[in-house]
Image (cartoon, rainbow, N blue to C red; front, side, top):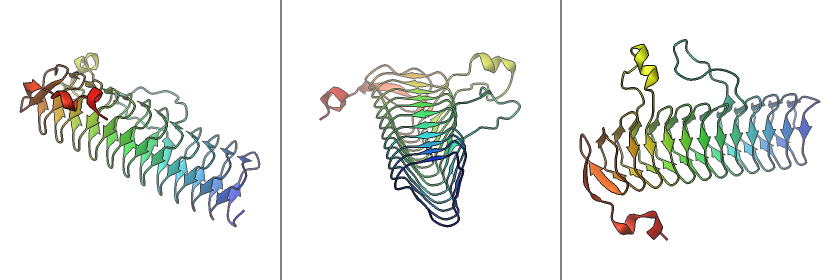
Length: 267
């Protein structure tokens, strides 16, 4: 092994392991075959790196995190960080299992993924993105550059969230949803005041195949129906019916989504 590598004697190291100088491998770590690790990277206790994983420089793989085969993690990312909650946080506390990243997934530079979240296979998380704890993310999901996904959110397979969008806590995005850049979702009509707000905290639900245009704002508890279309810059204050195009501030129905745009008619 390269000079300057610290490997705990209880770590399990596969064949053709290629670490760079000044990396640390803690107790109970399992590293598969053909894994590459950059300089100044720390793989913490109990973490698992699947076969063919490639880790960049200055990366922290936190305790208990599991990365599937063929994952890549770019420089300065933190994978599986444990949250520290404020005294008035609405997020649930308690112990969290390690983060799980599915086979073939890619994590960008300076990205932070929290413990307790589970990613499916072939996900892409862009540079500077953040995904909080207890999120469930399907296969082939794209979380774009500088996107924030807050705690207890569910994202279905093949959904794409474009750069700079904000997905608040307790949101559900179903399969094949498209969230354009700079979309803002909300979950608290009381904006942090009164005890009454705790009874009503709820993010939006965006049903299968719906599309939300750039810069749109979605109010708490709103449901956007299957294959609906929210136009750019809309402010969504009421539920949107399936296959309906809405626009404006507040958003109002304009027409049905054209048949050729529906998922069933895509090649």
